[in-house]
Length: 224
Image (cartoon, rainbow, N blue to C red; front, side, top):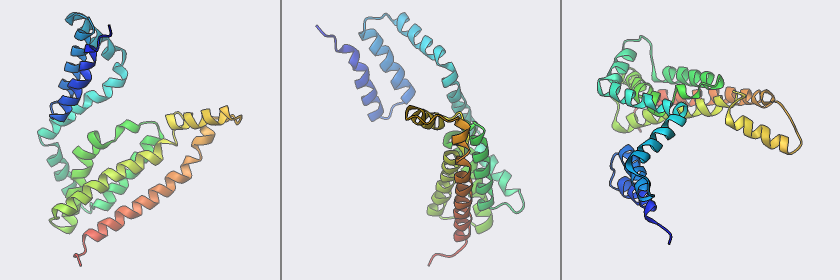
């Protein structure tokens, strides 16, 4: 007779997420329940979880920094970032985001695509600094304009990463394209593909940089 009890872990995940419980707690409880219903004792389940984490520690280590960022935010990281940008003479939201766009593209092109990102860079640092720069130039912003500034900061990170990472010849997308070409009888080196991402990245920088600067100027105009 088929034992369906191990599938209870799926139900726990669905209910836990629906009730908005802590995601990490929900997943751990679901994993333990699945193991117990599957016939493992409690110690064996914990051993399996520990082994899985250890086997994938190089993948998981990236996420260890997220609790640290959360702790720093709680103790005033965003306020410090705002104070820093307010003390810089001539700083504007447009200049700040264009510099971040350049930084994001260059680091992504060198393979350091995880050095930025929404949770580890945009939310705690880039967005608050952009807000502070915008308020320094244009005065107090409305809630709607604040949201637009945050959205532009997030978009800048997306554009920088998306058009910068393909310049790195060992990125998954380049390797996938190389594999497709080779399977079709057109062998070529990864760097031959990566080099063609450079013109696109340059165009993306100037196009999005222009959008950012235009948005900065628009913030200073009264609504019609």
